[in-house]
Image 1 (cartoon, rainbow, N blue to C red):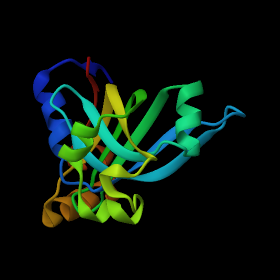
Image 2: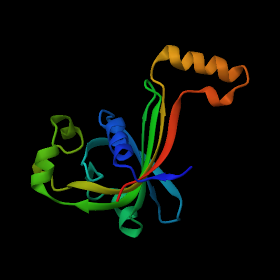
Image 3: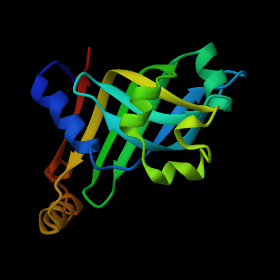
Image 4: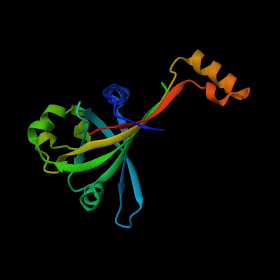
Length: 166
């Protein structure tokens, strides 16, 4: 599979994750093991920045300070769309950006709201992505599964592509 540098593919990846509310963030812990946890996804910028709220005192922040290479995965099973993104993470304390991204449901994690002393942002500069975009029409998928079951494994609709971001 070749690496796409086509801006259309980059935009396609961003559109696939636009309405997904939660992602899995993977970091490396102090024993060099992979550690994943769910994160409430907030926003993606056109240039490939992902934004998440986090507590500045969380374990993931310590892990990122030691190794800032991370992976973020998104899934939308209802559309059979899956995205894996890799990049570099950085802890950001920017009150203006936090205000721009703030939602009241975040008070569950940050009772002090925007003035919570542990409130911080995690910015991930995406370097690359891989996506699996299956046919979202149920009938198209069903026909593809039947054809695949009858011996033509190449009939399943959809595409898989690696995309370069920088």
